[in-house]
Amino acid sequence: MKHQQLDKLVYMSERPFWHFLLAAPLYYFTISMSLKMFDLFYTGRIMNGLKFTLAVFFMFVCAAGLTFTKKVYTNSAKKNVRFNFTLFNIPLCKDILFKEIQYVSVYKNHSDRDFEVQIWLSETKKKSVSVHFNSLSAFNLASKMANGLEVNLLDATERGNFKWIEKENL
Image (cartoon, rainbow, N blue to C red):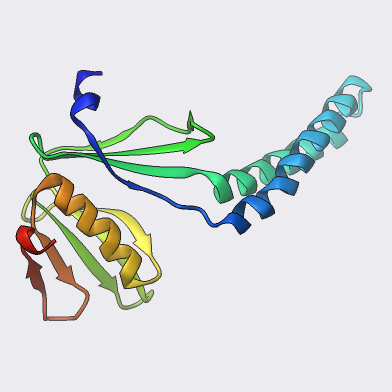
């Protein structure tokens, strides 16, 4: 718990309002279909209850996908970055922690035409931590992470023309 006090929040995903508008009916139908599912199991119609269970699960996953929050914390002293995923302030999974980050890069995947934010743990070991459809959002996250970790940022969006963005320029 002590290490979390040293961590600094550098990024929190912002959901547009229409995501919540789409998710509201999905949550409503999830609750109403759950009640119907329990009724089906109670009355002995097991197969129909199982079908409703699958539908309830699918609708909840869709609604959660529209409303979950991603937070990124950095610790510049230890060069650690921690990812936290919550749904209405309820943790969805254990925090994902990467230690001893060397630098952060933004890479353009030319086959998929998307931008990946990668953290480098050594000269040859890297982890892709986020995928974005445009360079602006990818550089926004990468620069906040690099600034919080006090490391350099590598612009790898053009083939064969990688550019370092120094800490001072972030």
